[in-house]
Image 1 (spheres, helix red, strand yellow):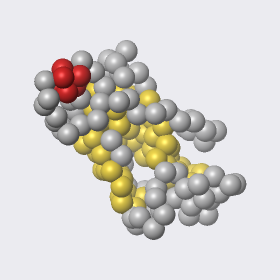
Image 2 (cartoon, rainbow, N blue to C red):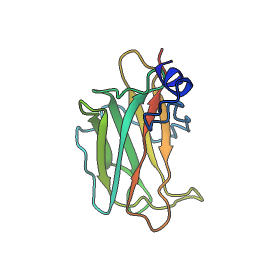
Image 3 (spheres, helix red, strand yellow):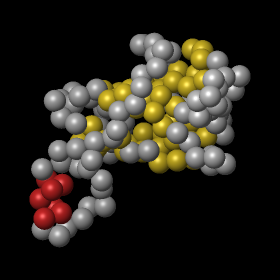
Image 4 (tube, helix red, strand yellow):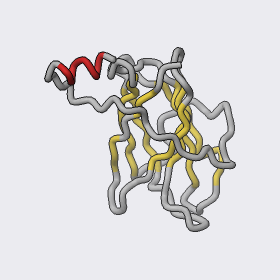
Amino acid sequence: MLCTLLLLWGISNGSDCRPTEPDALGPFYKPDAPARSNVGTGYMLTGTVKSADTCLPVPGAKIELWLAGPDGEYADDYRAALYSDNAGEFRFESHIPPPYYGRPPHIHLRISAAGFQTLVTQHYPEKDKTAAVFDLVLSPK
């Protein structure tokens, strides 16, 4: 609502308040991923968790991530859980995920926060890029 009011008043805070599109959970999700923000090197994913209602950051959101290893197989070594900081920001480093079984390279994400619907989505790295910003906009319950 705040985001809509700001736009109606001609004020832009530079934020996009549309909820992030959900994507498939996939068969390889496992709860209780290790708390860490790094499962490799070569690819940096950063972003901000925001509320679709207010466009404000959501601190303390739990972000679970998992991806295939360099060999195209899923393993515990490529699972992580981290939390957005006080500004709603997060940072995750991994290898560049490989394509496998006809799927493009991707990183799975499951985001949960008090007062918001759990979001399951995927990030698809752009070819030849080693970093990306992927903001996550959550819908209130």
